[in-house]
Image 1: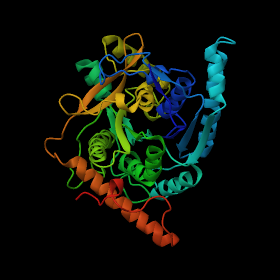
Image 2 (image 1 turned 180 degrees about the horizontal axis):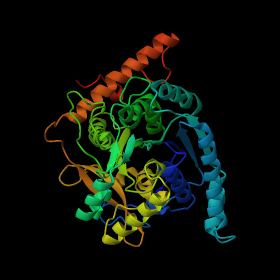
Image 3 (image 1 turned 45 degrees about the horizontal axis):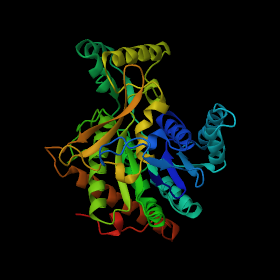
Length: 422
C-alpha cells in the first residue's frame, strides 16, 4: 500500500459563499475528515490494478486552509460559520470513541477557514486579493475557479414547452429558453459575463501564480488550478469582433466554451514548460442554484423546475444532481486525487473534462468527456490566453502607475515566467 502524505493544503475557492462553491468547501472538509477519503480514491485507469484501498491518505497532521474568496464578505462570513457547523455536525454523527471520530477530531484542530474579498468583475479587486494572500500565506496548493455569472432576462415559455416536447433531457442539458441580456459591461469597460467567467479568473491565476509555484517547490508535487466549466458550452461568438461576448445572446455558454479551450491550452503550455501547475477542467453538472432561481418567479416555478429535473433524471440523464454537495464530487476528487492518477489526455490525446454525474437513484460519480477542437478557429485557445495576458499586463501596468509601486504579486512576464506566446 502506497502512503500519500502532503504539505498542508491551502485552497482558494471562488464563489464559496453559496451554490456549488459552498458545496465544494463542504465536501472537501467532510472528505478530509476521513483517513482515506473516498474522493481521494483513484477512479481512472492510469495505473492498471491500482484500486480502492491501495493508497493510504492521512490529512490529520497537516490539516487544511480553505480561503473563501467572495464578493460579499458578510455572506462569506456566514458561509464560514455554516461550514464549521456542518463539519462539527458530521464529526458528532460518528460513533463515539471510534477510530474514525478520533481521527476527525484531530483533523478538526487543523482546519482553518478564511474569508477574503474578491470581485471578479473588477480587476483592481483581483490584484488586491493577490497582494493580500501573498502577504498572508506562504503558498497556494489549489485554486478552484468556481464563481460564475449569467445575465438572464426572462424565460421564453413557448420555446421551453417546444424543447421539452422534442427532447426533455435536451431541454435541461442545452436550454434555449433562458433568454440572456446582451451588451452588459463591467466597471472596467469589459464584457461583464466574459470578465467574471473568463478574464477575472485568468487574472486571478496570474496574480497568485508565484504562490502556486512555491507549493510545487515545497511539496515536490505540482499545484493545481481547477477551471469550472459546464455541460452547456457553445462556440456562440465571433472571435474577430465579439471575443468579450457582448453581442452574442449566449454569453454564458460561450464563456464556458472559452474556458474549455483556455484550460486545455494552459495545460499544454504547463506540460511543455516547468510543470509546476497542473490545469484541470471540471463541471458540476446541473443543479439548482441561486443563478437559475432568479428566473423562476413566482416560487412555484422553482418547484416545477425541480419536478422536471427529477423526471429527466428518471429518463436517464446523468447530469441532474439535487445537492451541491454531490455536484462537488468532480472538484473534490480532482483536488484530492494523487497527481499521478489524474489522466492528462483521453481518446487518443484529447484534453479531458471531468463532470459530476449520478444515476437514477442519486448515487454520484464522475464522467469524463473530451474537449474537442473548434474546427473553424483551431487556434482560439491560444488567442484567448494571449488576449487575457495583454489585458492583465495592461491592468498591472496601470496599477503600478497609480500606486507608484509594483503590484507585489507577479511581474508582467508571460505564463510560467516566459515571454507571452505570440
